[in-house]
Amino acid sequence: MAPDASTDFGFQSVPWAEKTARVREVFDSVAGRYDVMNDLMSGGLHRFWKAAFITWLRPRAEMHLLDLAGGTGDIAFRFLAAGGGRVTVADINQEMLLVGQKRAQTWRAKRRGMTSAIDWLCANGESLPIPDASVDAVTCAFGIRNMTDKAQALSEMHRVLKPGGRFMCLEFSRLALPGLAGLYDKYSFQVVPRLGRMVAGDEASYRYLAESIRTFPDQETFAAMITDAGLDNVSYRNLAGGIAAMHSAWRI
Ligand SMILES: C[S@@+](CC[C@H](N)C(=O)[O-])C[C@H]1O[C@@H](n2cnc3c(N)ncnc32)[C@H](O)[C@@H]1O
Image (cartoon, rainbow, N blue to C red; front, side, top):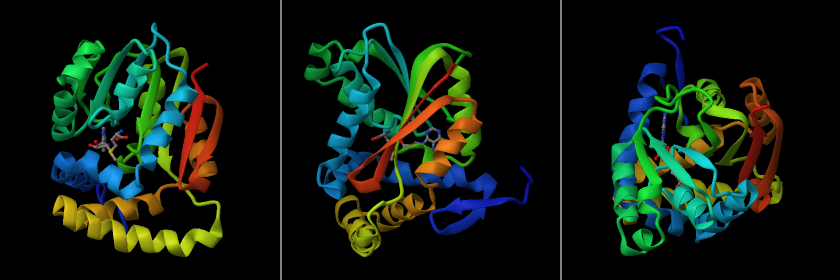
């Protein structure tokens, strides 16, 4: 990448080399209120989306999952509760991982054997310290739109997957119901930042989160990026009329 190249940070254009640090600041700031804000902003919808995501993944006891940008561990806990074997939660943000580690120490998680089934790894998805062909599945939920070099992150996910392994991504996407666009815009750019200010004391981070959704590629464009990274049999399913979408692909 040319040293003077720029990229999007929400609706702003920032130097390529600055984006990762700016995103890290966002998640440092929101980590403590991240889970409660997810429930508030989505009216609990994100729980149904994550449940649908795990159902499509079909966890098995012999499966080792890498959950990239795993944050506070939502996907990891759901994967294990659905019968998955082992998870590595990788995230660039130590604060988000610390919240997840605390969640893994609750008596409920311990009783269900989850505590020892999760490894927490602080790492950048664009250069993973994970051996080639070493995991059975890679998931990335609401993470890739925050990464600076998305093609490089997809290539890393392809690299660490075993042949026959599954890639799945859950991400905000392009609304397929144009009649709702105005309402959705109002909600994203007026309500979400206000909620961020009131609940997490941080309006700017939630404005970035809303803006970053709009700059992320639509379903078909993202499917093509997955194919370009070397993954096969790409398909996707919309959630809530395309507000979010799940993409699935395989390393063959
Ligand atoms: C919106 S949160 C999603 C967390 C979790 N997957 C979930 O669904 O609740 C996005 C996460 O992506 C992480 N992230 C952003 N850029 C990253 C990168 N380059 N490498 C790894 N993780 C990254 C952030 O630290 C944050 O925890």
